[in-house]
Length: 268
Length: 277
Image (cartoon, rainbow over all chains, first blue to last red; front, side, top):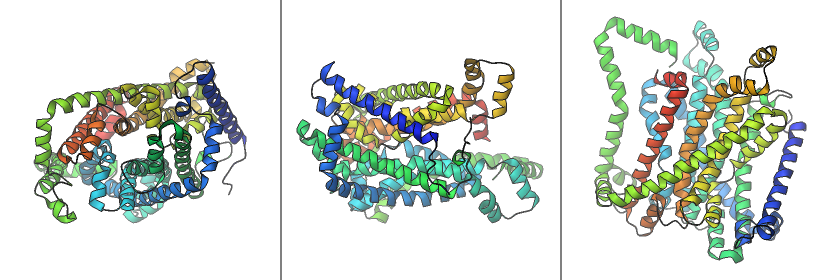
């Protein structure tokens, strides 16, 4: 099994990245020379400068970022257990689905991240509150997508299972869950960066360590530390990306039959 | 439970006891409300406080929160207005931008796919990182949060719109080709209508992220808005008012979410009907 397909798609993405880099550096150049703005270093630094700062502070960034990443992934793992379990219970019982759905949806519009200090107070531990928050924001996209996948089993397949008089257990293990896996991974790919965000927000609201703390403290020093600030932004983007790519890689291993992984497939 | 099972069950029920069925269905409609009421009562009578060993200053009870809302009602409504403008403005701008970017990508999918893949990775960038940057750009007014929310919502819409406009049954394209339809015609008659469900799922995701984006954006250097008041009151340890902000934000969010859902009902009626089943 090939994890990375060295075909035209990757070449194109490479070209796009290059275009974007040129646009970024061009933008950074133009706000200094064409349309001068105040404090260009904080607003739009050259990427090369940011990279220099990143390499200078590499050790610290990796250490702090690693703490954030570990906490977020633990929360994500908890969300990955709760989310699918809830979705299966909801698909088993219409009554439960009716009761839970409005609350699951409204739980997402409640900006509970704002209550990080209270969660802090309830759990009395920085790591626990980061993990808890990450789990809280992760379960929703997973539940909703997995439930949609469980509902989207093709009627012919369902009829075949009904004609075999298959048990509920067989129906789920052999048909519903495998066919809903692509949906599950879609939810997980949405949720993985969200868990990083949640963990960073908790850090911004007060935690002893993590990349969010570095970000806030570099902001307090104003424009002199703007290079470090942008380095933390770049670092948190990289952490988010790493979480996404990790899930995408697992997806490719677990569900290799999806059309977009076949060579030359993936719709028109 | 699947459709067939539901049908046979409702048939069985209607055959045996029609009056009981309608009563049972009414009960099922009421379940979410009863459940919510039970949670609220348990909260009011400090069940959670005893379970988790909490004090009132950590988790205020509903009556205190209601009191805080009554006292500060004018300020809360005014700030909810500001936050609402940020959410809605950013949501509309971001979704529109994402959609507009998806169109050329879908018309030229060979080269567009790479660009969309790149935009999809933007989703992985933690939003909070953008909030201070936007404050640098737009100051502490409403526009900086609109910027945050727009940046947040763009990628999701772009990826979903592209997926909707490109994952279409190939036989439709063959039919259009046999009509010698132009690219533009294919876009209007096939791609756009078929992407509607994807567009609305992106809009629904975007609505929830917009609310969080606006609130978190206000934590930094804002002078008005629910998120500003929330972080301010938390620093002052005035928890009832902080929770009042959360409640208002939740009401605002649920209202906007149902707005998107009802617009979806107008444009994609078959989907809304499937949900009601």
